[in-house]
Each structure stands twice: as structure tokens, then as C-alpha cells.
Amino acid sequence: MSPLRADAERNLRRLLDAAAEVFAEHGPEASVDEIARRAGVGHATVFRRFATKDELIAAVGQERIRTLLALAEQALANPDAGQALTSFVWGIAELHARERGLHECISRCEGQELHRAAAELVRRAQAAGELRTDVTPEDVEALVGAAVKSSPPDRWRQHLTVVLDGLKPR
Amino acid sequence: MSPLRADAERNLRRLLDAAAEVFAEHGPEASVDEIARRAGVGHATVFRRFATKDELIAAVGQERIRTLLALAEQALANPDAGQALTSFVWGIAELHARERGLHECISRCEGQELHRAAAELVRRAQAAGELRTDVTPEDVEALVGAAVKSSPPDRWRQHLTVVLDGLKPR
DNA sequence: ACACAAGCGGACTGGGCAGTCCACTTCGTG
DNA sequence: CACGAAGTGGACTGCCCAGTCCGCTTGTGT
Image 1 (cartoon, rainbow over the protein chains, first blue to last red):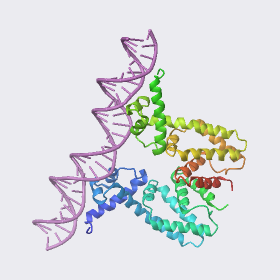
Image 2 (cartoon, chains in turn yellow, purple, cyan, blue):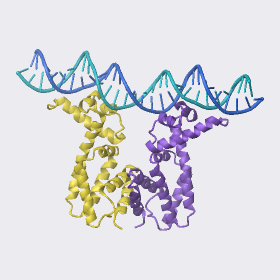
Image 3 (cartoon, rainbow over the protein chains, first blue to last red):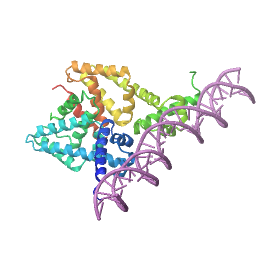
Image 4 (cartoon, each protein chain N blue to C red):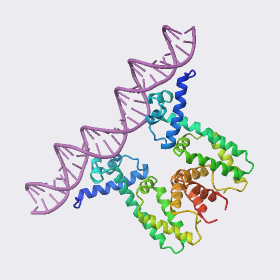
């Protein structure tokens, strides 16, 4: 696995970008042909870099997870635990809303670090009395994801507000 | 369009039942072959009754909508507007959780009557001060559907509880 | 009992998809 | 420049699916 040739590297970059775009628009169901076309390469090139379509999806997901992780770490730096969680949640939701189809790609890999960071944010918010204690980090993830993904683009903010209100301690 | 022959009627019934089962398990993506097999019928028979797969999905959805409508009317008879809405929501959620895949089938047709009944329940609950006034009936539908459909089978109750708490007036 | 329409299902078509192959092109090095 | 390795893409395979066709079967009215 020696370093890639310069042209191959360029094509790989274009491929990942095109894939991110296409998956964002149509979800991971989008065809490999569509992605290759948008990247301006033959679809055989896709399979030279990624053994299967799933590997491509995973690669795109991994790239996007890095963005989310940055958000999480930024939030962890916030000393106000309640604010830390909500800012993280709103940030993630914003991304998911903008690139709807990517949510499914991301949730297929789910890096451990991101999970741990999110769990920590939840734990702290609960300790600070800003979040009901009968929910798990997974519950929060599922609820936020659900609120954003199954709402029209002009209503997801409202829906997220409702969910966040529901997550406040009684 | 004369009345169906007795055997044809029987097959049609089996077909709709099988379709409901299969769609409930695998969603509307399930193949027509799978349904025909479970109904003990050739798949050509499906297309003699329904011009396209979508028509079959619609037919199954319509049948299930009748159940939901019954629930809605029962709830409308409840003089306590807050209770009426929550009992309706819990009832619907229970059905959706039991037959996950059917949710997608149903939301493809969405009978007007059901919509109107649900909207009335929402309106009444808002008038009674039991529901926040900055949400529309569509918001409630989306939130409840989302909470149930994207939660593991042992957590959807908890998630629905959170959503319902979030829907209470502040 | 018989005739015939209504119903039937297996075989077929066509389209879309992931994944493979191979003759050709392009890059990088000596 | 020239040459081998790395890279490429169009053509190909095999699979799954919705929808069609047609010769055979079965229910029903007389």
C-alpha cells in the first residue's frame, strides 16, 4: 500500500467529496454510478479504492464524524453543563438538517470517541440538574436525530425545541 | 367490475393480510414476491388486483387507517381534551411500535378524515391549556411518529414520554 | 353435466444495481 | 525520453425487482 500517485490522490479526493454531496442529498441509497458521474470518474475507480459500497459510505461517515467530534470537544470546554449540551445538540442538528442523507451514513459507523464525548456531556448536564435523569445518552441521540430527520426543513427547529423542553427535569 | 369470484375474493383477503404482515416487518421496501409467497399465490395475481405495487401499499395503508380513525373517534368522545389527545397518541404509538413498517405505508396516503380528527384533538387540547400553542397538528404527528419509529422497541415509551412532556405548555 | 368466462401462476422482459475484467493511458523515475 | 508500474473507464456479469404474457385450471350459471 505505497503512497498514491498524484492523479489517483486527486480522484480519491473528488470521489469522497462527490460521495458526501450525493449521500447528503439522497442518503446512502444513492447509486455508485451517480457518485462516480459527479466526481467525473468511471465507477470502476470507486471499487479500486473501496472494496464495497459500504466501505465508501463508512469512509464518508468517518470524515464527517471528525467535524462532529470537534463540536463535541468545543462543547466540553464550556463550564456551563446545560449550555454545553444544548449548544452541542443545536450544532449537530444544524449539520444534520443541512445534509440530511448523511445522518444515516454517520450512524452506521459511530466512532467510539464521539459516543464517549456525547455521553460525558449528557452526564454533566444531568449532574448539574439541567437534564432529566431518566434518559440515557442513547435516548438523547435518538430523540434529537428523530426530531431533525423526520421534520420538514422549516419546522425542525421547532421540533427540536419541543424535545429539548421535554428533556428538562420536571 | 363485476363482483369477484369466491376463490378470487379469498386470495385477495390473504394477499392483503400477507402484505400487511410483510410490510409491518420490512416496510414498504419488501418485494412483491415475498408477499405473494406468504399469501400462497403467484405474484402475477398481485398485479391482477393492483396495477402497481404502490396501489397495494395504498390499499394496505387505507385498511390500517380505518383502525386509527376508530381510535380518533373514540378519543374525540372523551370530554377531557388533554386526556383525549394523550390517549389517542399512546394508542397510535402502540400500533406503530407493534407494526413498525406500516407507518411508512400509512403516511403515504393519509386519509383526510384522520387528519381532521387529529387536528381537532390538538385544537381542543390547546384550547384547554393542556398543549403548547406554538405547535401545529402536523408538528405533533411528526414528533410522535419520529419518537416511536426511530427508537429501539424497549425505549420508545420513554421517548414518547419525553416528547409529550415537551408538548405541555410551559 | 357442460361451456365459458374469470382466475391463475410460471416463464419472460426490461431496467437498475453492485461488483469484476482487461486493453489502454498516464505518471514518475532512471 | 522511455519504460514499467500504477491507474483508468467502458464493457461485462449476475442478481433482484416490478410488471407482462399466455396456456392451463377452476368456479359458476344454465
